[in-house]
View 1 (cartoon, rainbow, N blue to C red):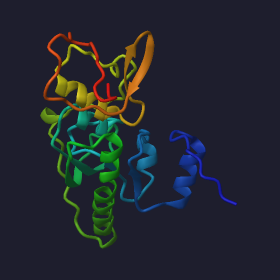
View 2: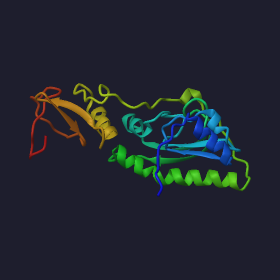
View 3: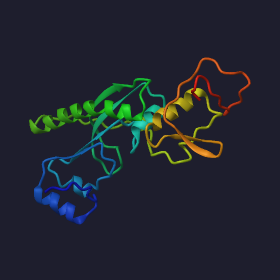
View 4: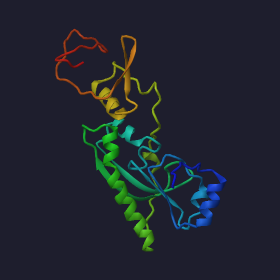
Length: 214
């Protein structure tokens, strides 16, 4: 029988195990845990990570959410060196991915799976063949952060422009979902779209039902 577990990256036993294996390369694929450098340096060629954004844009654990939240038309994947600071290592390969305006965060995450594997495969094969792998430093002036949104940041503000509200809903769907309060109850909104015409009597934050839809 085999059991898959999430190891503690800073565990001394894990470091000893990796050193005993003496791997050629350590690979982190869409993993949000920061790896200590003594673990990365245990591999002959060090470590590389695959990140679901075009670094240095959207560094951090939630880049797909921030790509939608920011209204990006294109995102992508980046193969990069694992460095001491999160998502800051040299860029080894990138592949862009246009964002369909109908996608939510789950759709975008799925769309990035194949490009990420292609980029990873290309890079690992270069190492395997002994080819030089160009390393491009990240431009710090273009860096943005992509932290997880807390409950307060996930709340819909009805004073916002329509497009900003729609982006928030898409960015947090299907989970955890943007939320609002209706009649004293918390409601999670999983889909939203702008409409061309609204009753002129409505104030920002007021709702109405038309043809069974709120």
